[in-house]
Image 1 (spheres, rainbow, N blue to C red):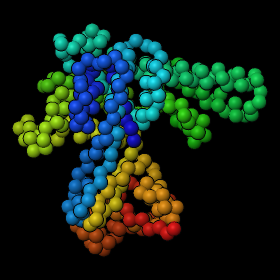
Image 2: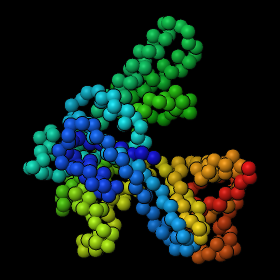
Image 3: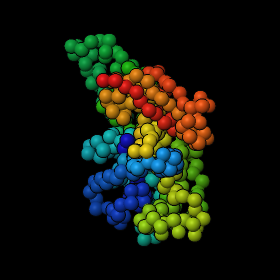
Image 4: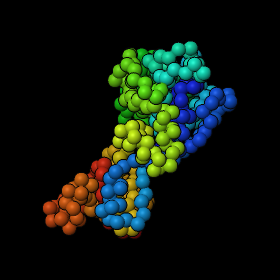
Length: 354
């Protein structure tokens, strides 16, 4: 999964990216070119550590998130996003919008003053406008197809109805993520990459020791995470032992970034399930609502094709039992078939035959 880090220039996007990925990309003034930086990050999950200890596993594989630092969004003036940048944004599964809350006389805000609510509203307007341009263009083509003929009228009517629904939502200045769609709608929208359909997490980028500001007008619209971006980047780039000493000195249980990684993982509607044993503990990423055969296919396509059943135990049940034998004695180890919906924290052993 890919999550794009977006925001106005000088909002601290690259600082947050460096903190997340332990990278060292320059955070000074932009060159003016569209720069894309990509990094892969492990999803922090204490369950993995406990399972490694439980099984004395020789190898550990954690779930991953890909973060993409996308430079080049405008300074709040509403206008069509350039083609190359729009292509990058369309490929993302979700966004982290970094909103500047810190003052710095050496780096003035591109809109002169600090106003997080305004910056969030401006970004929303940018994304919404670009979706509206796409939808209106599609409706124009559908009307032309209707006049020309050559296409099935039923197909044109179905597409027109859907895109009129999208247009009505956007004209009300509402993001498309507020709408519900059928499987047929999803098929018809494939390839459009509508930006306001993508889930969004807002990061309030604070100065060291700065209290969290009240952000009006957008309450409830997004989940917001306050982060002291510069401090988080400095912690992330310390050797592990020094970072732990730093956290202990300031009474911090874990870096704020860990929560942000977990939140962005959940933002896309993902869960983790595990395969575990002495050889390896492996955290696998799956969408909520996936069935056991689909989870098997995440491990290997052959497993989905030849799926017979899955032996399932919940992580919490295994830890409470203390051993697999005790879990089995208490009926916590179950056999599930093709219709079983995998839950976050399930430990699976797939039975299959090719």
